[in-house]
Length: 60
Image (tube, rainbow, N blue to C red):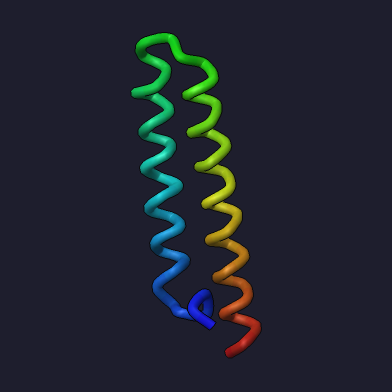
């Protein structure tokens, strides 16, 4: 399974941080829906990273 790779949690964290930064850029021109979408994606990627990390720890 390709989600068992130890590379995925750091990738999810990077995507989460990138989306947090994107919230600021989307909010500058007053685009609330765009900023909200980035905020939701940031949370989803952070939760996914935690889930993948916990699953890897249980498998060890």
